[in-house]
Length: 93
Image (cartoon, rainbow, N blue to C red; front, side):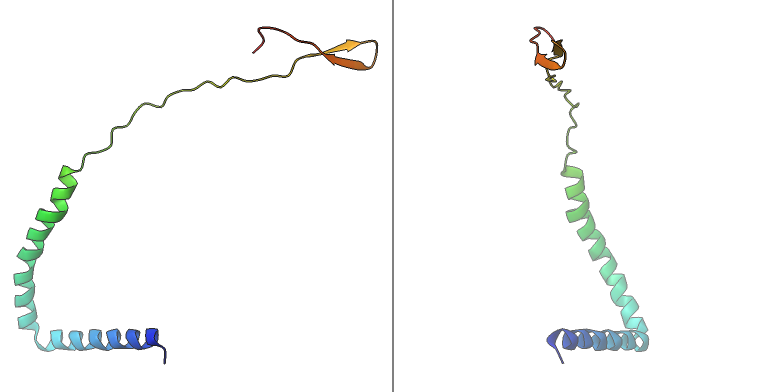
């Protein structure tokens, strides 16, 4: 029997015993739940909701549009039949 399997069986047995106890002592369980509800409500309001109210939403900035320079190859010029030579042009983007 591995340790993981043993832990799983232990928790399953504990859950079964708690269910049986809850069925047999239903009145005590309901009284405990009634006492526990205000405590949980207090903790939720104090710790969870307080944190949600104090945290500020991040400010969204407008995206900046960046234009990238496109480098294009120089146009080819036909010289004497089949040979191609690059020509330099100024001001072409």
